Amino acid sequence: MRVFDFLGVRTIKTGVAIFLTALICQLLGLPPVFAVITAIVTLEPTVSDSIKKGLVRFPASAIGSAYAVLFIALFGNSPITYTLAAVFTIITSYKLKLHAGLLVATITAVAMIEVVYDNYFLSFLTRLGTTSIGLIVSTVVNMFILPPNYIKEISENINKLYKNIGEVVQSIIIFNKKTPINKNRLLLYLDKQIIKTEELIRFQKDEANFHPLVGNKKQDFYISRKQINRLKLMVYHLTNLKNLSLDNLQLTSDEQLLIENAVESLAEHMIHETDVDLKVHEVSIKRLMQTFWLNNNVMKYESSDGHLPNELILLYELSALIQLASEFDLVKNSIKNKEKAVQNQNI
Image 1 (cartoon, rainbow, N blue to C red):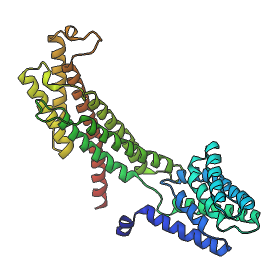
Image 2: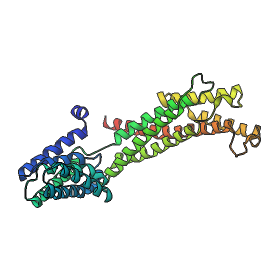
Image 3: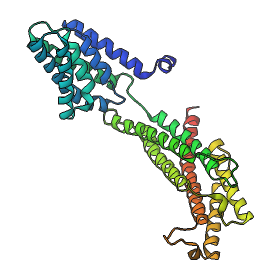
Image 4: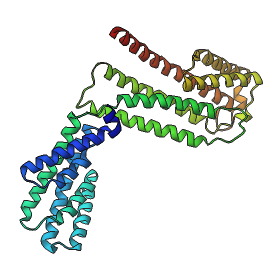
């Protein structure tokens, strides 16, 4: 495992794909360079992506090879041949929407010019053959050698994101801030982390078409999808608080203290996993919200555009954050209990 961690799974798989591709070409008496290039660029994060993009790269490579042969026949090995082969390959691939094959097709077209001397049709078929070998080998390697498994990374990302959201809660919901906080930067960071994790979930979903998840892995995958949705909702509620000025709220000192305690407990629990009964804070915030709604005649505070007062917005968003954190913890603790039960059975 240390070797895998040091080199990286994808690096190892790329090396295996290169070796097998070059070996097969050597045994068949074919030039390996184009096949190796194809094998390198076709090794995608998932088997599904390798196949999908391979189906695009093959015709794109055929187009590049055809243009290379055509312009060699017309102009020989000259600067105009390189230029026309590359430009026409790019234009044709773009028009046919073979965007994933643009790079490998252009490289194939330019590189072929140097090695084609006669028998243009045979050279064209040779390029197609070596391209096919690279595509097939890289896909097979991706499928059977250290097949992609993102479940562990997804779980780690979700737990890290949960802590990061706790830090942002602690940074954004602060009364009497002495220094300004770049809320947009904090929320943008959370959005990027969510997008990255959702991409891994998409990879794992695509991979399940070729390596079906079984038992606990399938359950873990579904749980991860639900947890990331909860985290997205938490970021959404934080975003609603982004432009809220906490220093101008009409709150008593006791009400402000209650909110501060709830925020601090929520943040500490999310960041450091402190033992806190979030339900108590959720109930307190909801009661305060109901009290504020009834006692302060909310309608008179409403602006002409129908917006609710900032006090209610703060209380509602904070209540939603606490509820989502409670739901997240419920699932997280359930997973931990199952893991402990499995460990006890194995002892």
